[in-house]
Length: 124
Image 1 (spheres, rainbow, N blue to C red):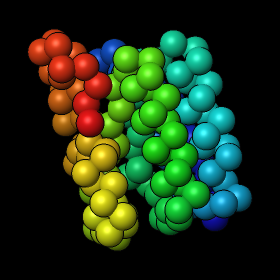
Image 2 (image 1 turned 90 degrees about the vertical axis):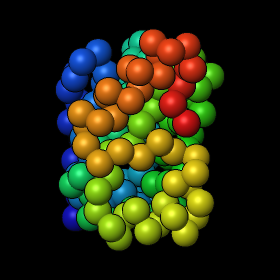
Image 3 (image 1 turned 180 degrees about the vertical axis):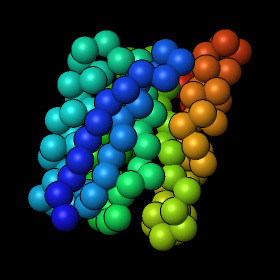
C-alpha cells in the first residue's frame, strides 16, 4: 500500500493527514513533508494518523524527529490516533508518554491552542 499525504489548515493549525503504510520505504516521504511544513513556517502541527494501516519503527522515528524540530522552533505538535493497533505501538514503545495523542483533529487543535494561550508552549 502506498503512502498518501494531504495538508489542510484547521483553526491556525497545519493538519497533515497521513494514509496507507508508513514504513522504511515510505517514511522518507513523510519526513520530507514534515520538514517542508516546518521550514515553511508551520508552528502548530497536527499529524492525523486516522487512515494509517501500518506504522513501523522508521515511521516512529520520523514522528520523533518532527516533534524535536517543532520543539526547537517553539512550536506545538500533536498526533491524532484512535486505532487501537496503532495506539498499542505507542504504548509498547512508551511513546504515548512523549507524544500528545488525541482522538480527533478538533481535540488536538483545541488542546494545543490552549497550551499556547496558557504560556505552556509546545504540547508534549
